[in-house]
Image 1 (cartoon, rainbow, N blue to C red):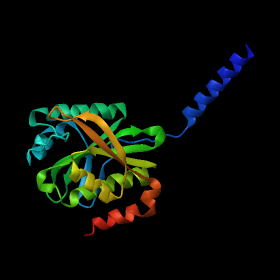
Image 2: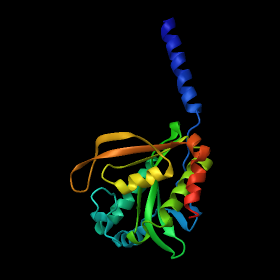
Image 3: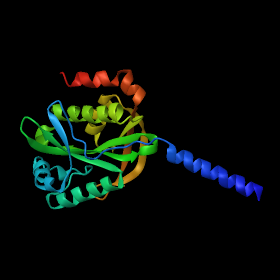
Image 4: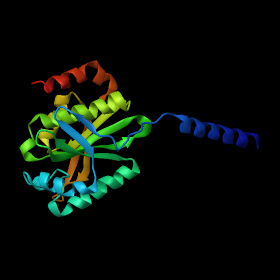
Length: 219
């Protein structure tokens, strides 16, 4: 009888401790702006703009990306907003400020509040804006917000093992390769791809990664 009571009290104490523990809080309504781009919270009325952005290069034909086909753009947005409601994803559209056009999308995803962890992904840009300042500008905004505003302890990335360009871009940021999850996700063509996992800790961000990435935007 006494042991049962003690166990019950211990369990209650653990639950109270877990409830009181601080957790990451990501506000999906936040707009991020700087270095020539603005990340605006994704909305249903972005459908036509995102359809046009993806048409520049027919990005949906790439086997390892999540870019929607023209007819699937609304469903793509609805899925992103559904994940946002669940608290697992925070989707933005990317607006290039010189042209004023929406040219792609990016997200925080696989948000783990108790671990103060987010991943950056679901990222794509119109072909005309690839290999420009846009990707670095967006990554700086997202990493600054994650580490300096939200208090994240780690930011992660994952990409298909065939997407060598994405892997090179992530490594250029200074992220560390954590490993490969084999047969992690189906590709558009029905094959099964491996996911290459990367991460950066807040200590790495503050220990030199921030300055190195900032230097990219000045060149």
